Length: 113
Length: 109
Image (cartoon, chains in turn brown, yellow):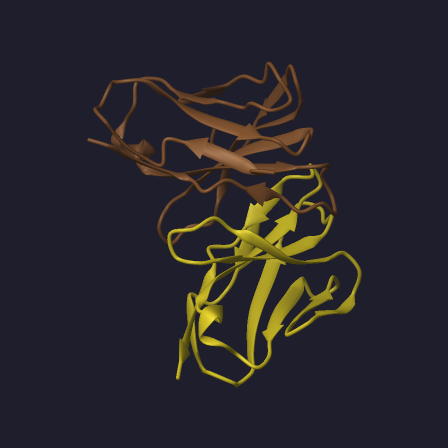
């Protein structure tokens, strides 16, 4: 199993541009998450999904959108990128919530200039 | 508001023992997780506590006191590869993880 994969690994985006961060998992997990991690700060939840066709906002959803058309894929869309969206983005998945660990992808390091 | 506090940085010696503390104030509690994150890499799961007490897993142990809103991660027989950040996260009443900023552990020979 590849686990959770993310593309791209690195990207530089100009202010106002849009892009999609890809996330795929092959563990048949129902739950998927998008986090951002800024230096010196804890991970912040952007969006999450409890299954195909169902998504919900996390703590910091503004400026982002998601979709979940299949169990495997959970892309994150950035519209009209701003410098404040410079961050490391992690996608994660889990079998369920509560006691189940989350498995993380390797991350996407995004710079908006 | 919800808050997770951990020390920013700690230093320890190879072969020694170190305890990393975490205090939390959250809306509800559905368990506490510890993750390890090496520089430039993704977090990986270490432990989960939902009941009070100590959970031991090899060289790593995690303790929880729900009444005090307190947990610690104990690392024994430290190795150089244990140099990493250790993240404390609490699952709140909405089953969402609230994360601390992490404790950077530096191991010296």
